[in-house]
Length: 422
Image (cartoon, rainbow, N blue to C red; front, side, top):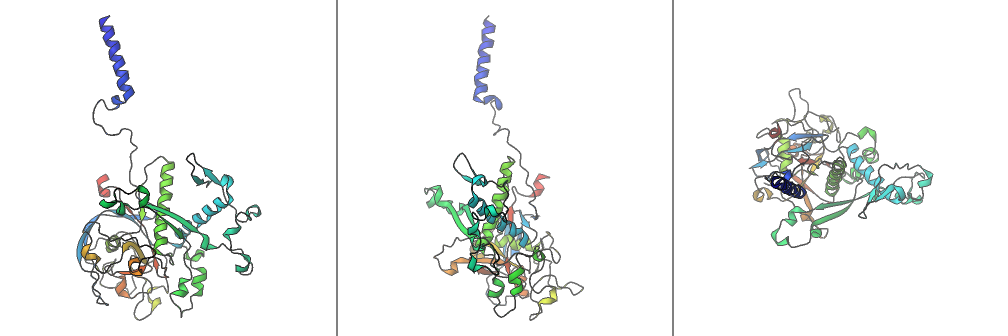
């Protein structure tokens, strides 16, 4: 009986321990159990860029004698990068998503789902047929008014395609003097019209007959695989935020942890990726020449004194035109110059860190224009050879859109290198 009582007391003790959850680890430090494993995947359309170090800056000439790209060794962590500039067709997915989300909200009813915590979510299972006469009244505000129509055609008023972007400013939150501020003060919001400015083809080149590009470049299927242009830095950043939310929502639906965010590359990431692992190379393909052994141009830029057609394209060309560099990246020189996440400062190379360096600045609307400069890299179809060199750098203002500036995204690799997982 005594042994039976001892057994009963031990059983009760075991039940108590089990109820407290201690038996899951047998009293040992095991970490949180039953965590779903995560393996970094290669995002669609991206290539892996391994970590490493390189000497940034300094091209073989400095035609402006500006001395804004001094030579310096820096190190860069692994990341994924879009193998081409974001194309018209890819950016159109963002525009169409914004348009459809606005339409769902205007229609209301079962097109919108209200969650238990009061949030309104779009019911994407409901399809919208814009030609449906029953929806005409609800969607009337999305179209140009009668007096603004050409031949009475009912076109969307693309000025109303506005994306609501939100992000958390970790850099501002990291400042020690800001630690006592409420979390909401670090949540940034931006209302961004997403449709590209197609008029840049005339605005940037006043005395040029570019009306065909204005009318057709963004929406016509013939230009689907060409780089999107006429997109401001704010629009490019909003695209990255939208693309991140897209993959996060899908990962959440599958019950999986999301990957890192999509972002614009830093200036250093872009230059490092453009070099393709080559040391001291003037161009993504090596150099120092812009023609191959057969005399063919290796990029889309402005050869000579204006022989645009010499490289095969008067304006932009397809995103996969010309040979990729050794990382598999196309048109890291020429075609469309590209936005980076880095703010532009002539002396940035002097004070940035030597590990994953960048210089960022979130300019407010009322600040001087000089504070709104963002670095662009790669040169474009309208630039001379100097600007398509790996080390060249220039800038545009964050709220401007140009017929020669596009972008591509990067995603930081979750871990040190992809070789660690082999």
